[in-house]
Image 1 (spheres, rainbow over the protein chains, first blue to last red):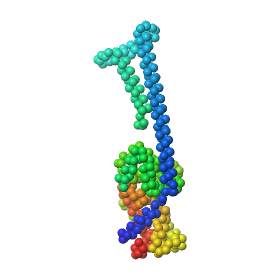
Image 2 (image 1 turned 180 degrees about the vertical axis):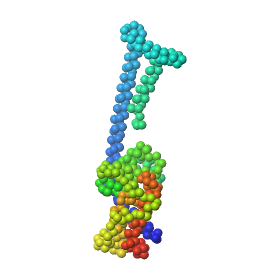
Image 3 (image 1 turned 90 degrees about the vertical axis):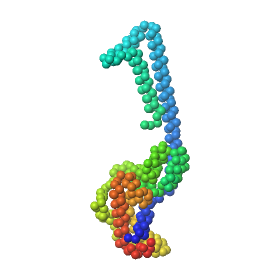
Image 4 (image 1 turned 90 degrees about the horizontal axis):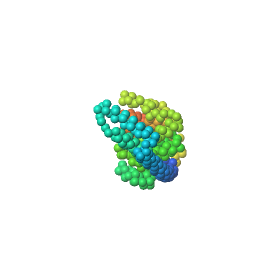
Length: 139
Length: 215
């Protein structure tokens, strides 16, 4: 089969398969893209503000909790109140439980380490939650 | 061509929305040809292509296109997948590009291509009056184009989609195989068979010498 006929047929097939898009398609599409871009920017603004509000509230709640616990613990140190003795009893149970468990394994650690450990874990958890839900865009 | 596209994409990534218009202008007709071949409805095809371009825009502006494959392969795979999703949504059917198993041993069998193509309906004389063409060459060319159009129109999707990707979207056989997740051999066989059958039809009507005279 001569090459000219092959090329001729290829050309005819390409012509037959080619269908131009409807008139005004590009303009309509570009308007759609501009609109979606505007909506996206507005959404981003709203999301950013929302994140800052949530972060602010979290910081406020954490600060209140810390200040309040500091206030309670200093009060308890000065006054031997009923609440204070309960608080001391609970913390001493926690300390004794963990130091007892570790001493079975032959490890001796200062009891205060557990309290600091709890605070540290709580801070890491809070930090990662704030990071996961408020500051990162997506995963 | 590829470098020009990459340059335009960089502009889009830096926030130049008008640069994306260049991509749209360049690819809209070829993208529409593919979408229409799958959906067979102008309105649906327009919606589907618009969605595909929106996906492309988001993907480019969010820098998700990493240039691992060529831009045209990336673009046409978005166009193809979006059209197939539309097809499923609007017809509640599965778009089946693999409905005929083609292997090396049976690639010469291709009679199903002719079953759906009734040659007796084609008579060049029927078109001549409408064409208002001056020269004999133009008349013959228009006649042949009509036959080809009819043949292409009668082709099942698993042939016509591949032919559109090859002839209109100018994708290589390897790229088509990548987009459709079909073996390269299948792609080659389908293009070959579709073209051979068309040649058969044309040469039955117009002898080689006659065709050569007018080409």
